[in-house]
Image 1 (cartoon, one colour):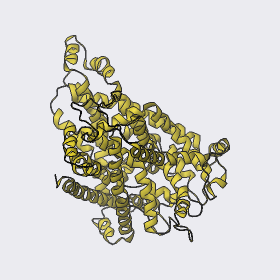
Image 2: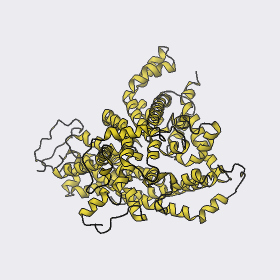
Image 3: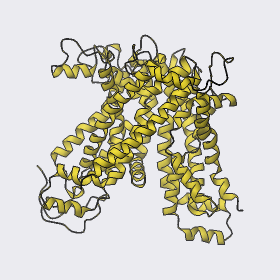
Image 4: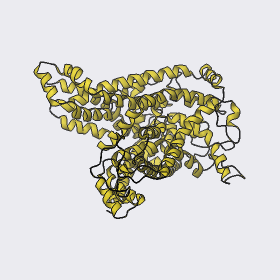
Length: 297
Length: 306
């Protein structure tokens, strides 16, 4: 009966090897080959050709630029707001559970569905965003065309991302906040620290592991952004991310190169490059967050 | 109308553990003990409104005529055209929406059931059985959590092609049958909630390992099964990128891909698209109503341990 435990854990390892690890490694092999869906004759080693092509590919550079732009516009406000909401939820509240479940509404909503709602929201002529901005006196002369340039499309997409993940991150922060010893707050309050000061000087440093965790999570998620930029396009199937690629992300470009241009080899090289970039950025962000949230006491 | 500065904290809040010491006034208290003021409620009300609004507005447009999306100020009250719009979505010739919903149900329930079974089995083995290599193997499981699977997507497509699964639901179902997160989550729960003595006693009575799993472990991990089941169902139902790639061009994709098909073309009819999107969101709203409290707890527990 010694083999029974191995049988119980076998399904995970088998499936991971076949559909997780092997594709990851094989992806590297595909990236070094010619692999076209429309021309099966063209096979064989391409060497570093696919990777060299990346360096001079304007589309890839543009997609990388967009991805980082949207990533910055989404991650930073998202985590800051989540922090503020969590600290509000961390007070003695009536209907506590109700507020927490409410924060999860965006989390359960399919991104495909919410992106399409936001499409209506950000339409140029009859959109609610422009209507609301009009009330503030912005864009009353010429309504903002959210799909016309980089900055506006990035803001629109970042709004969707933020809407989706703020509540989720707030719950992660809340969980960590509840295990902070009460004495710390009591002592600091006696020293005259107000709620705002307590949040930045006590709460954030003490929940640092979770902050780092969310930074890494949203780095990995943000740099792989796919559904929102895909469906923000009024003609989604083109996968272009705007007429001039204003908001085309790398994940979207991988899809376009692989399944619209049918060049799987080049798409594989792109996704490998993205993987390496994610690793570097996630590591940098971890270091940075660690310094910022723990540098002072 | 801020906090009344009484020394007595009202003890009817079951969520907050009783503090050891109480000081006079709200000043020397931890945030957890400070009753929320009007400002807090106002702030939370506004953010909750923002969280709910897109869903509400999805319904507004799904129940309206075309004019609702083409007027200023925008409509904010639901119309009476829901059945009309729904009928259009379900009778479209080139998008088989009803079939796609059935596919989503098949995929999400199969994956959820399998994840619960396989992950609880593996979690049980890692938590309660002694075998060579169990520690490094568990470490391996945890490490796989950091691997973004999506980035092997080109090669995964080629693998599925070799198996002949592209364009079939198998390509969507099989890779999701067991997850590293599920194994990790189940192990944590079983370590804490199934006493070793119980397992030992069952073993002494001559129970086989599977028998122990079935009659000792399973009855004890109901809450964990519920949480993992809800989270898995939501994630599987909402998955878009991989189904889009592997089910590309097939007549019967999952509902998320069908929704994106509805929204592709030169002229998108939003009342119709969002009627479809709303129908595909309803099952998740039901999940939230049934298990909201549990999902919240699951997410929060997952955070503390990671």
